Amino acid sequence: MPVCKKCHNPSGQASGMSAVANHLVNGGDTIVDCSYCHNPHVSDTIVDSHTEIEAPNLKLIRKKPRHVAGALDLAIFQQSPAHFAFDEANEPWNGICQTCHTATAHHTNDASADHQHEIGSNCVSCHSHANNFLASGGSCTGCHSSPQGSRRAVVTEFPVDNAHAHYGADMDSACLVCHSVGTHMDGYVELIDPDDGSIYRFMTADELTSDPDLSDLCANCHDDDGALNLASPLDPFGNGNVPPDVATQFLGTLQWNEYYGDFCFGYEGTDRHVNSHHDISDADQTLSGAKIECLNCHGAHNASADSPIANPANQALTWTGTINEFCLTCHAGGNGPLDPLFPMGGIGPDVIGPTIAMRGLDLTCAYNEAPWWVDYQWTYAPHGLDSKRYWGGYPNIANSDAVLDCTVCHDPHGSYTATNTVGNPYMIRDFVDGTDFIDDGNRPNPATWIATPGTEGSVVVTINGTDVDWGSSESLCIKCHATWLESYSWHAYCSGCQTCHGHGQSWDGADWGTNPDESTSCVSLTSTVSSSSVTQQPSQAQFNQASSPHEGGTGQNCSACHVPHN
Image (cartoon, rainbow, N blue to C red; front, side, top):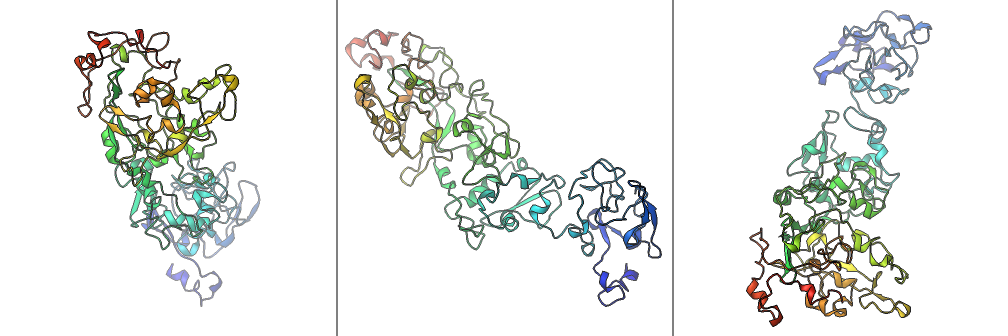
């Protein structure tokens, strides 16, 4: 090289071709000198094995490069840029950039690698001679529109002008907001923490199995103070778009082992771990055994305000179905609480269902029929196509037959407010608007029926031992069913709606029990409470003292005297 540089320098005889350097390979450990590829004395004339045309190679390229024994003969460089590399269908692969390559990610001299990468382009526009032929220049989107080594072609994941809420920001500059290129092309992804600038380094996302993990990266930008590592924390891409604050919704402190009921109907629940948000933090995952991360629901590149969620089975694809179909890809069935059959994601850590042992079905009468609360197959029947709104003769007015979106009641990011720091169980929203729906608690004559809308307001679902408040004026059910508590004395007796109405179960469908009217066939007062954290159910003596007709009523059938919902 020093000899060549006597002429190939800015003031030498070959000053017009002075931007040259040796070819560095094997991470810079091996130097390929000029003479390995160039014959300084003569221009080799060869016959192109693809076209049978005889012509000299350009740039004094040797017909037999001297770098490796496995180099293909003869090296072809009669046309630029066509002969830098030959494509998939043009064997032998003996373009000048291919003839020696056996371990590169693209354009090897055999069938072991991709032969379509930037085919027909001038290789030295990105792999410049002056930069030792190492990748430089070009653009993020220019390179990553096709696979790059172990990296997939991510550009195809970007919504047009809307990639991860960049909204028209310069894409290549936008990439560098999250991606570090300090060790570019070493096979690893390096992401920059938006708050402290630390590096998240991994080959595949599931390598980050403990804090800091990718959900921390997401939360550190999507919180109330934005990306503190940047000059404009609430405008990370310089286009005026503020990252929505979702991290705050995960601040709820509720930790409840699901168990509820009353002395009227017995006690239900699985003892599964329930909190006010998905199990994203390490602490939540340790407690429940369940696991989900931001990337299970959102694509790293395709999330936008218009299409924030991704296909749970392949997060490189934007979700195109309904919100209910999205939620039910996980919460759709399976074989009970220990085997919910959650789908496995294509990118990011896989979703894991609960693994901590739960209370199973009681053999006693109040907990004796599957499906019951612990089964996932009852999805959203009372608020969907199995609702009474589809009964014959039911008044068909606006929204009377609406299938509710899961997100009417549930906030997918969790429940938390400054005045409800504990949060609500099952991610019940802190504010619910039921005014779009019909409250028919009074069930008047359909001929004279007048629609009564629901109401709206803040929601606080309090838990006190086994008493879970669903129906009071501050709680959830009343927001849509504003007149139900006063419609029947039965309703006014308790506010624990879930004791009778399980999620996804409908009255006269499979509500609670085996009798023709679906009332429970007896009262369980002997069920074992498996969680020491809940209040013990009343004793038989306490039940007998409730009123004189109950005295001596061990095992008595409540429906012999009481007709629920009537």
